[in-house]
Length: 330
Length: 295
Image (cartoon, rainbow over all chains, first blue to last red; front, side, top):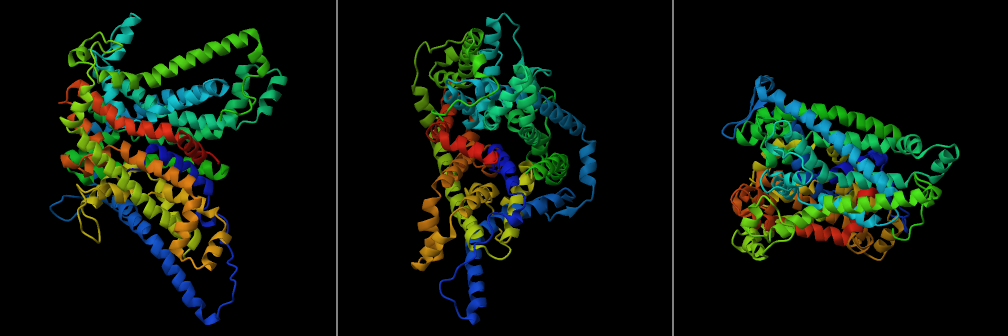
């Protein structure tokens, strides 16, 4: 749970570098034993070495077993159970799923989440790309710009949300004051059914675009300059170069971040939880917010787990595409 | 990065040197500098100075750029009167504990997987890496139920820092980058230490760890930042208010606190990470980009 989007996103892409965990790293170094040992003790030595190795591995395996592997298995089963703290879990088959579908908020939550994801892609995908392309051309102030764009990533999300809640405030809030300077009408931001989701996406984009921008910037730095020179000799304009050199060269990394972003934004929670609480009129109830309510407000862990299972299946589709892409390319 | 030779990018040097090119370049540069400062730095300025405004000034629908009267004491009030200092120290304990646990557990696991290479080690590694593919939120409920009643041990970790520390240690990303780094350390070094009579633990402490400073820095930063920023998980597993980190406390108290003290609290929750970032910028950015690309 403490794995942050940042590190897990990074990990997800690095995880692929290895490709095959079985062939990870260089082949086992052939131990050049200085002195040949008596053959009889060989088995004992192997057993001893393995024991020592597993001693070092024990704490890690125990942590994974208890807080990762076991919850995975349990999570798969929980959706089909009724869970209360009072009595042992009972099998209820597909009841939880039936109850989910009967909940009118269920469809709303998925629709809202889909809308958030779509908007987040429009903003959150274009903004870092444009930023990275511009930054890559600038010869001055690069490290300052790179630093500032990453600053929000270092803020605790709760601080970001409380800060923006203040900016969105219709009274003394900054945004309506800025609008006023330009003689634009004041907005209800978080209280407006139409604007609430957009407001959430704006915060989310502000908070997270630093990571993507830096990844793009690194990828842009890897494009061979000769490609641009060749395109220029062929008479390609700057826009054509962007279209025919930059974007094709970035295609892989763009695909990867696109998928990771879909996976990440579909799990949006803190934004609606802190800023709108799901309102106004359920316009910002997301899948994870509903899941949270099921589990930790109504203590219906079975129902929440059924929701997790569905979310997992949907995200699994994207993860599957991601895996295929990185496998073939890696 | 300061002394990098200009690499050919989208726009040709010749295009840059033309009159319109130079003008456009300066225009875009200034626009970007101002835009970025306004977008990403100004909110932080607004937060830290807002904390020093009086409540009446904060509620005024016409905001002032500089506080009319300075009230730096709202920081002190938030720290002592509201008790944010207490929550701040809680965060510190949670973050440092998670950092130590992660280093202890993940370094020894990566060392075993990389250098001791036990039977089925690759299977274990594969099972660990597989967990990275799972969306965190799908495991929220089962992990919570596990923490309420840990299998085998039958203890309840709710309201104890172990509920943060132990799940954080099950971090496949850490083990993966540590192992990848350890793999590059030549076996000859380890063997010669062994011949000199060093035991397995001694080799780790005196040979492997000193060579691994860069990767240890990356793991440490991510560990501390991760716990410091976390909100949902500590809110769930630390319902007892006295033990909550500042992020959870801020959200709970935000409705009741005077606006200037809330802003002071937000600034205090943010400062350690911002300082960490300013000091370790290079490590963080390098870790981020090297980790995500084919580095």
